[in-house]
Length: 301
Image 1 (cartoon, helix red, strand yellow):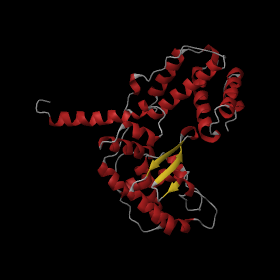
Image 2: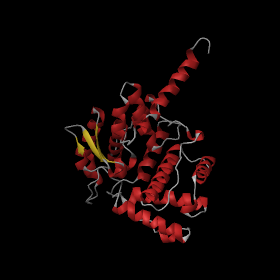
Image 3: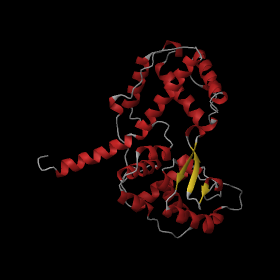
Image 4: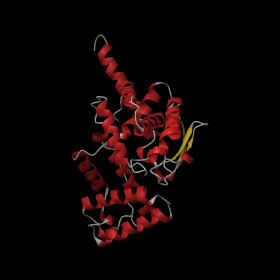
């Protein structure tokens, strides 16, 4: 847990941030190590930037902060999360009758960027792994599962045997706010999961006790950094020039489903989005593709 007393803030801001941290733990029951720390860090960075006490802020301060993030090339996903954190913080202040402003936070025009996705050919290249070692089979199972379900990397590496039902072909995962969801798994991913779990995972255990499905070379849970390194290496091997990230597979999963006829509500449930407007960004990806085709093929374009 973040030690708020060590943060470079005024005593008044430290006091309110400490109260907010307690509220998130005792009232919202959020996960301390991930969700709560993210909220607290987001609000700390915001308060540090505006250099004011929380009860002297207004919408202009928030907008200036968002403009600062844009000028410093923060990604759309990072900015959206920070907006959500700021809204939650001010909602808390209002609900507790501590401080209230008329919030008017909208995503500015300079943030309306679309998620980058891999083409189906690029995904096929990425998943075409030469299967020689137990790690190759682990990597194949992970990437097939990630593309088949749209799991976040944190959800993937935290999976245990209890989360996977190979017979029912489903995965049970816990996303943001520790919310549970169930996602179907395609046949190809099931095939390589079975091979990895039945024939190769025990080779990686190193006689250690670990319930996680995907292990590193020490027999312990694979880390986010370990997954990222594996993904970058595989992309380099296959000559994929995109600056690939784990989240790009999640975007590709959603976009390819939508382009092949899946309805937005189903995609929302599989991704674990609380609001369908978040999922709606993938319709814009489809529209961009339509525009490209129009510009390319329209005879008077």
